[in-house]
Image (cartoon, rainbow, N blue to C red; front, side):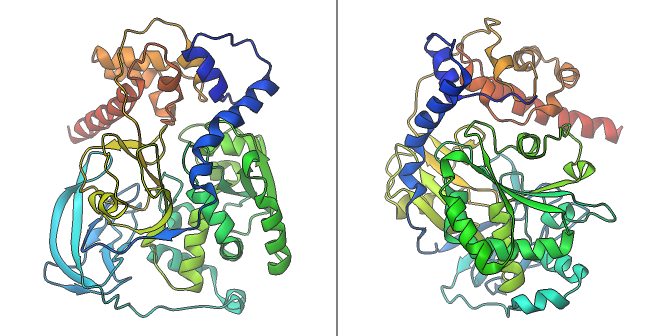
Length: 461
């Protein structure tokens, strides 16, 4: 059985309170404690900010090989024009979000701390567009699966739930059958409501995007998973289902972290257990994020490649919070200036649990940027592990995170493999509950990077 951690239990652990509560009370209090973070942006209208002068467009906004630049310094590009071409088996195209001039192609810093090849475009503010191929619903009846596959591939669509896995690779199922297509609407990270905003404001587009996916994958059932705290969406879904004459199942999920993680989501909806490293397709399941489905709608019906997304901007130190439509390549400093944010002491790209703290204001938004949070800073006194076991109890993958910290501290990196570090989903629950504030996530993330580098070196020998 997959284990999850409630925020009530976290609070009890951190403040040494009595933790002998039944599960109903835990679940009830979990909802209460998470809600104050989300309503700040949940019901706000989608906003836009003016486009910046400069766009920093990384050619690696996905898992796999970076795209190859197909433009040169001095080229003039149109909005939606392809500027980066797929390379290798796992990769994704990159497109220009505006029209303008390519002024440089450099190695530029990303939120994950890596430097990648980046195309810098000066916006000419003309928004001269590439010619787009628009389609109607009736076109879906006649089009071949191969053409749909090509449309998704050319549009540079990747998973927008955080993994950024190229969608055309995920949907290349060969002769395998899809039993269940799960649409992930479980936005379990605190603060973030961008997916909720997409589900509420673009419901018709999501259902039409699902029609495209159904034609391509032919799943036996389609299930949209949403958390119980968002159950008001069911009425909206039912209305659109009737209008579109397209039925899907809606599954209400417990409002418990990390419910939105792919493995937990599959287990909750299908009761199937997918091992870390095993493809869900091996169990007859494919999972796509709701914003990914909206991107497929844009590509098929409007002919638009993936150049922008809805991003939650929130946090105690943010101003003008809300859900914003942001083009990829927009630098952080421009967002800060436009929204008149004065405190940048702690900035997170993503959510507070699995997101990444950034330290350079030139870092741009990318396809995987679901949120930008401006949070309070706190002085953390790090102590040694006291072997309390709370991190073990919190881990949804049944791992022993304290072992990773010990092996990392003592340079025993290969032992981290024996401890199954590859099964860690980086949810951050272990560090959140740790009463000694041991830097578990630093040990895990840096340890994974070191192991990857060691693997590369061993392969070169």
